[in-house]
Image 1 (cartoon, rainbow, N blue to C red):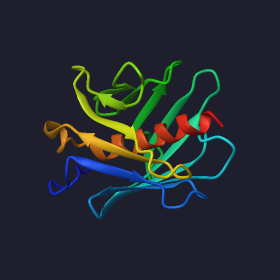
Image 2: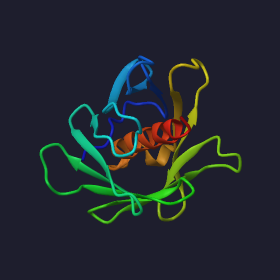
Image 3: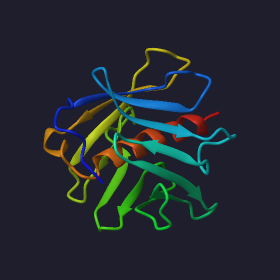
Length: 172
């Protein structure tokens, strides 16, 4: 996995270009960094998801009913690169095969922001909904400057968007 280029800003934007499809794009100013596509079905969890960065393509697949998990693989590979295990209240842990672990949870009491924390409980970034267009999902991502070069950051950003979408569709 490659880190995002050093030229990106510390504030990014996830944008849903069309309200009629589950496709999301991550921008730094006017530059497209990543794209996330969720296959159409009734619920977001369990859907095959394709995530693209400038250089890589990832497949996310949810499995399980009582013991859910989200497998993350490089396109064309049979082995998991990382696994996300949700907990009952909407938080969860993602563990990479190389050993690093990150906790997805609310960043404040009201739950208006969510983010990934490292094992030292340092906030890597926060994702907050942006209420500009009520028909499309949009969010702002603010990255801690010290984590801008983190190797896992591109995948964590995509996973954050996926979990945000999952949470939004769960209410439907």
